[in-house]
Image 1 (cartoon, rainbow, N blue to C red):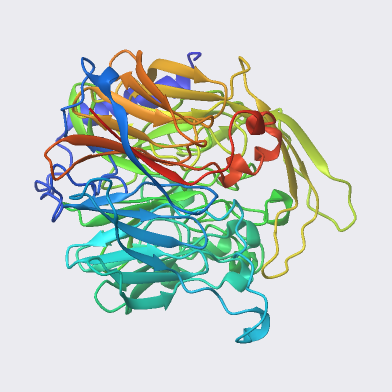
Image 2 (cartoon, helix red, strand yellow):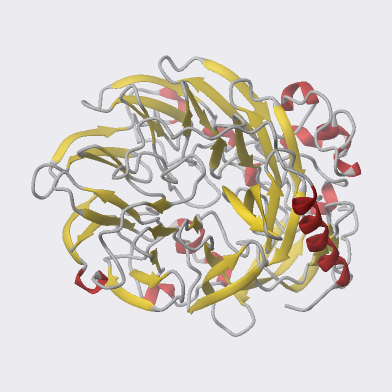
Length: 600
C-alpha cells in the first residue's frame, strides 16, 4: 500500500492519543459471559466480543494431520447454511435456512442422535386461506439463509425465522414458549441475523434494505417476548433513540434529527439501513455495537445527503437502546457497502499502549480501529484493493472520494442510466458478513476476504412495498491479480497485512482461531482448511459435501475431547451467482446441507 501524508497523520494522531493520557478510566474489568464454559460454543461469536477464539488447545500444529471426520448430520435442507451451530453442555443445536428447522443433537451418545426437532410454522397461503398452495419463501435480497441462534442461561433457545418472527424454544424439549413478529415479510422485512442475549434481553435485527425497509434493532424480554425497546436507523432522534450529541469528534455527526435532515423530503421512511449483521457487547461499558446496512434506493441520485444513520456503526445502551455514539463509515453510500459486518471488541496495542478498541473490517475496503467508548477513529487503512476513496480523513472522519467517479446527476424519469466501471471493492465488499477472528495468542485478526471489483449503472427506481427498490445494476469481476478471494492476517497496531492466502473464489465463510495455534476456514469449493496462525502455512484440509458459507467452531465433547464442526451448503449472494463474480462455481460444488464434525 502506498504512503499518504494525511493517512499517516491519522495513524500518528492515534498513537499520540494512545500514549498521552490514560484511556477509559471509568472502565472496570469485564466479567465473564454467564454460562460460557471453555468447551461450549453458546454464542454466535463464542463470546460477546465476537472474537471467534476458542481456548481449546488439544488440536495443534503437531497433530492436526490426524484430524478426521467422526460423524456428520444432514439437515434435510438445500440452501445457504450460514452461521454455526451452538454447543451447550452435551447438546448441539443445529439450524437450517428456510424453512428454518432446528435440531438438538445429543453429544453424549455415539453419532449424536436427534433429541428433538422444531419446524417453524409455515406462513398461511395467499389471502390467509387455511388450505391451498403453500406460501412461497419470504423474499430476501440474498437467498433464504439464517446466520444463527442465541442461547439464554434460563434454558431458552432464541430462533430467528426468515418469515419475520423470532421464537423462544425450551432447550430441553424444543417446545415453543413464545413467538413474536419482528418484521413484515409482505414489505420485504425478513429476519436472517443471529440474535444476541444480554442479561434478560434478546436483541435482534431485521433485513430488507434492498426493498426500502426502514431499519431498526429491537430488544425483547427473553422470558416473555415483551418488546422492551426499538431503535430505528433513520428518522427523528426520538425514534433512533438519540439524546444529545451523537459523536463530538466529527462536525458532520452533530446536530438534531440528522436521520431526517440528511435525506430529501421523507425519503428516510423507506431509506434502508437495516440491521442484518452481527451484534457485539461490552459488559464493562454495558454497550452493544451493531452496524446498519446500505441506504435505499441503491441509486444515490434519488437520496441527496449523507443519509444518516445508514452505513454506520452504532453503540447503544443495552437496557434502553439509547445511542451513546454513532459513526458513519460511508456517508451517502453510493456503492451499496453498508456497515453490517461484525465489530470485534479487543484490547489492541497502538504505539505501545493498550487501547480498548472496536475493530471493523468494512465492506468499503477499509479496516477501522475505533475508540470503543466514544466512536473516535484511531486507525483507518485499506486491507485490500480500494479505489473509490483515497483515504479516511482525520479531521472529518469521512472518506475522501476519488475524483474519477463523478457524482451522479439527479434521477429523472426516463433518463438514461449513469455508469461507472472498475470500482474496487465490489458491492460484496472487501469482506461480506462472514466473520473474522481475533487470536489472543498472536493479537492478529484473521479476515475472510474478497478480491472483487465491479461495474455499476444506475437508473430511476420506483418504490413499491415488497419489491426491490434499487435502481442499480452491478456486474462484478476478479480484482487485481485475478484471484477472487483472500484469507489474511491483519496487525491492528501497524495497520498492515502480515500474510495472506489467495483463493480462486471469495472466502464466504467465517474463521475460527484456537489456543492450539490454528486457524480453520472454509472455501466455496467445500474445503475446510487448517493453517498455522503465525505463518499462514496450510497444515490440513478436508473436502466437505458442498461449498462452505458457514463458520467453523471448536467444542469439547462429553468425552473430554476437542472437536471442530462446520456447516457446508452453498448459497447466499455467492450461490446465487454473485452478479457475474463466480461464473465457474457450479463446476466445483453442488447445493447441500450437511454438518461435519472432526476429531483426532
